[in-house]
Image (cartoon, rainbow, N blue to C red; front, side, top):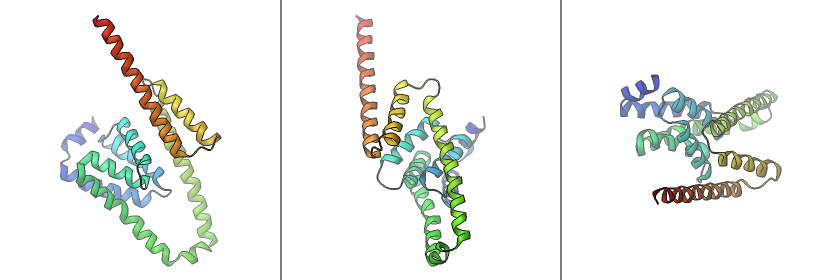
Length: 204
């Protein structure tokens, strides 16, 4: 299909060039922070070019959220590393820094005028509404990916428990992440022990 043809015909240098310009584009238009850029990463690297699978993208998002630093920067660097190794990570890192650096520098000169301008304030409110819709779409896609046919039930239970702990109990995200990681490791360890025991019984 289109994905396999793209993956086969594109050279390493072409991938690096495309990584740079795609990251530059996404960093320029991803108003709303790291969560917004995740949907764009999935659109380009999973759906359009097939450089990553949904599972690989989900794993990358988890690592980007739990690692120190900004989630958007971590995510694009992980994608860049996955596609083109260390050079890819460096390319995506620099490309992601250029637009914010330019925009923040310009905004700093006109901050007072923008902060008191009603037109600018209304524009920012409208952007927040659009950002909320994009975030909702990204969350929906991730939920569908986790709950799709063939996924283990433990992941669904952890997801539901994490939502309750965050939204209802207001538990800090750090505790939720570490608790979910511990439960996931415990679940996989139990599965490994059971599978090993069944294999031993069948051999005996």
